[in-house]
Amino acid sequence: MQDLKEFIRDIPDWPKEGIIFKDITPLLKSRESFARAIDTLAAHFGDENVDLVLGAEARGFIIGGALAYKLGCGFIPARKPGKLPWETTSAEYELEYGTDSLEVHKDSIFPGARVLVVDDVLATGGTASAKAKLVEELGGKVVGIAFLMELTFLAGRDRLAGYDVYSLMSY
Image (cartoon, rainbow, N blue to C red; front, side, top):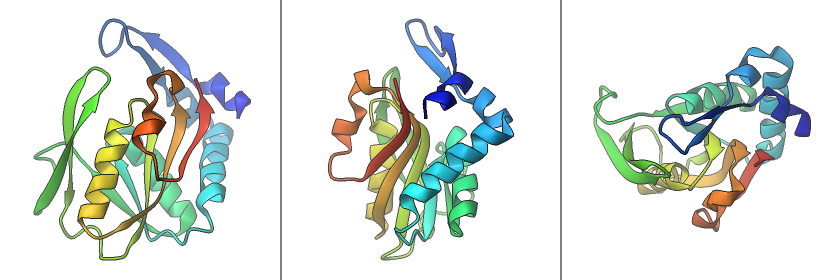
């Protein structure tokens, strides 16, 4: 996946000073790189009989929606508080630069559903851990957690011990 790294742009001091943001928009605009990323993620989890893909706004929607289509399953949006129109459940998490929370509809995951959690970047593992918690609270089974890239220096994988964690690129 080294060649996919060519499509990741570093943006220093965003969203705050000291953070180097990994921008995936060049990867998304390249038909070949985007297709390769989705195809590779789908191949890794293709034997898991995934029922649902759960992705958080905003970049998780892009990757998760495409991956759900490729896997032939449904998609669940995890959103910021107050953005979903139905009854929700939420989980709070820590970011490398603050705290936040996500919500999903209470009826989004059926008991026993096999759910793949997806996002663009594995940093501290807080967002992915919160999404996995939401899946499990609603009776689903997390069959894996997929990322385009992993920031290994933040050790987010440690927070996700016990899950099948897969990332295409590491920094």
